[in-house]
Length: 318
Image: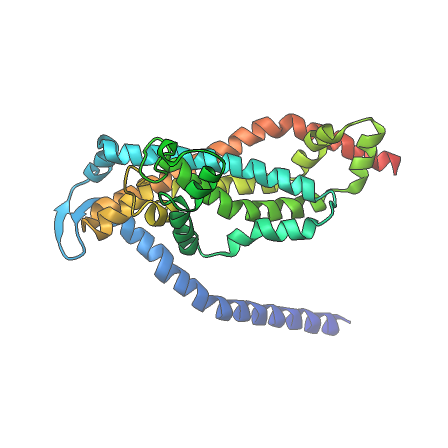
C-alpha cells in the first residue's frame, strides 16, 4: 500500500508539473505581447512626460514643468471642465437605461422590439454616428426642419454646433443616444438575476412598484450599476469622438481634454507635454473611480440592509 501511495503521489506531482508547463507555454506569448505593447509604452510615456521633446528631438529634462503647465493654462483647465457636460450626460444616460430596463423587465408587449431599437445605436461605429449627428445638427437640416414643422421659425433656432451655450450639450446627446442601449442591456441582465420570491415577499408586505424598485431592484443590481457608472464617468473624462467628428476637431469651444492631448502630440508635435497631459487624465480617472466606490459604499449601506432583510423574509416564507 505504501508503494502504491508513493507512486500515486509521484504521478500527481508529474501531472501538476505538466499543467504548470502547459499554462506557462500558452501564457508566455500573450504576456509578452501585453508587456511589449502596453506596459513598456506606458513606462516610456511616464518617462517622456518629464522631458521637453518631440517625435524627432529631445531638448532635455524639465522635471514637473510639463505638469505645472497643464494646471496653469486656462485652455487645459477649461478642457477638463468640459468633462462635466459629459458626466451630466452619463447620469442622464444611466437613468434612462435603468428606466427602460425596469420597464422592459416586466414583460411588456413588444419588449423585444424596443430592446433592439434602443440597443442598435451601440452597434454603429462611433465615427459613423458622428457624421450622422453632424448632418442632423447642420443649420436648416434634419433637426431644424423638424422644429420648423412644429411652428418654430428658423431665425429663433440656435446654431447647434456653433453657439457655445448649447453646442456641448448637443455633443453630449450623441453619447447618450449611443451608449444608453448598452447600459440598458446590462441592467436587464442584472434585474433578471434577482430572486423572484423577493418581489412576492414585498407584495405581501404591501410594497408598490416604486418601493420594490428602491428596496429590491436597486440593491440587487448594485454591482452592475456601479460598474456602468464607473465606465460612464471614465468615458466622460476621455470623450473624443463627439468633439472630434461632430464638433469639427473641437471647434467653437468643444475641445475636450482628450482632443487637447491629440492636438498637442500630433499637431503641435510636443510629445513630452502630451504625455504629461495623458498622465493627468489617468490620475483623474483613478481619483473619480475611487471616489465613486467610496460614495456608493456609503449610500448603498441602508439599501443593502433592506435588501438582505427582504431576502431573509422571502426564504422564511418559502
